[in-house]
Length: 224
Image (cartoon, rainbow, N blue to C red; front, side, top):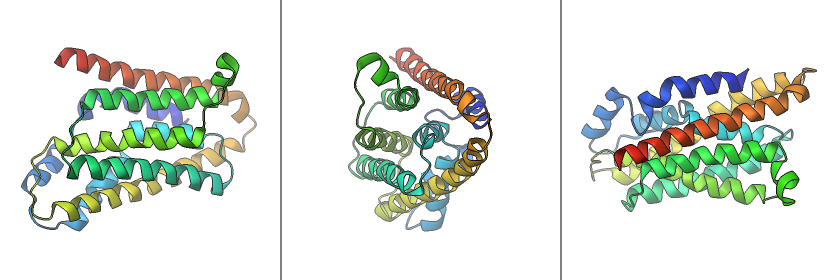
């Protein structure tokens, strides 16, 4: 099951990749000078495709979306949100605590799983605006991406072009990951077991979000 794979991935990789980039990629980023469009596009795409927190949120967002029009609207809102804060965070050198941001990203996964389970209507008698929520959480996902790049001393030579290229790569990576997720989801939805498994799947998704939150909060308290 897709969610099981992603949750296992979270458990195996959170220690290795939280707030970090692979050593070879980090070395390139530190040494890069001048316009390096293709490498930064590759790095952006790679970061999104291997970004389990972003993938978990996307799974939650599209879980019950059947029309491509609806998928397009929600994914566009998410892309607009994280593009704005990624570019703003890096280019304005606005620093935010990465543990707090990543904890909120974990919360976004919890929120979407609860929304899919109808918890807000059942417990509080309200239904949050799902489009606004996806956009707002997209802002935090963008800051999460920005904090990864802020770990490095980026050369001013070609900085704007390289960050724009990184953002393009993020969007390409999102499209690739989303395509794979949609293919798997569509096969799953056509099985008789889908609706029986949907509740359990979103509980697993929520647990994964809490796992991400707990890891980041623990890191924040440890560093503090």
